[in-house]
Length: 122
Image 1: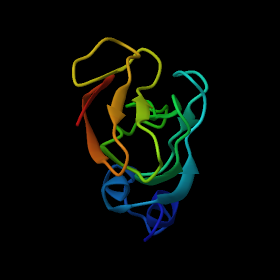
Image 2 (image 1 turned 45 degrees about the vertical axis):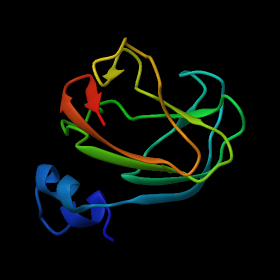
Image 3 (image 1 turned 120 degrees about the vertical axis):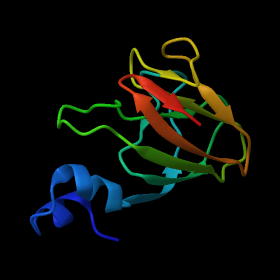
């Protein structure tokens, strides 16, 4: 699947390219014990292969300085422990408290979508 930069190089506007680019990150190792040191998600499709107890991943900011809203992120937990998914600093998931994680069980998956600056649902 093409990356955003590859699609933009064909003169497709960035706003449209983001809808069609599905970068994948395979076999992620969840990290840290909180938001600040969790593994930083940078792709649309993410397969977490290793989840030690109390580790997690951190979503990208809903707006990441490039003028594009992060529309969707898919995360699959193939690890042996529950995975914590943290929003970017100051953001929230499912109208929860700012910076609070969402968890998904072993072999679970989630599709997260932005509904505005600083807000994810899924």
